[in-house]
Image 1 (cartoon, rainbow, N blue to C red):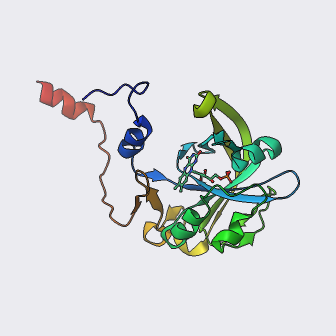
Image 2: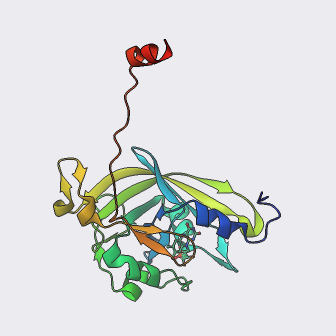
Length: 208
Ligand SMILES: Cc1cc2nc3c(=O)[nH]c(=O)nc-3n(C[C@H](O)[C@H](O)[C@H](O)COP(=O)(O)O)c2cc1C
């Protein structure tokens, strides 16, 4: 089967069904007049050792997304990593609440002050990444308009018990992955694969 993204009804569900699992950024931001906002974003990743990106649709129905607007207006945000113990709280924040609602309260999560940016961190998340906005790249138009938020990491908070030197204990982190739709996965089933080293002497011998 070949699928044309421009004509295939429901292509978004096919795409999010094959690019799996996706990490989830739990993004906290604050409006210029101080209203705190928190929402999950799984079009999310790190794209360099100092840069994270996530993409937000501009509107949902006739409502604009608070996270995107706050970040464009203030130039700051925090990415809180979603882990299994807060997965349900994360989900609780994803309804389209009216502007002015603090989703921390809805989800029973605790504000922790950030060091550099104004947006609070989620205390219950073991990793909080304070970011300054680099730029928002507009993608698509009309109903499909998205803002690709590119953020520069200015400070990372990591809970002491999950880090040893520079090694993160994945067993303790318990990061949550997003599959398609309402499906999620755990990161408790892992395996190691050592990257091969190119040895020109061995390759030459094999080619003889
Ligand atoms: C796990 C999960 C991942 C999501 N990822 C995205 C995303 O990548 N982009 C997006 O626009 N909305 C995404 N959403 C929907 C937003 O979280 C939702 O529209 C939310 O209400 C936006 O809140 P805000 O207006 O406070 O920013 C996701 C929802 C869930 C539950």
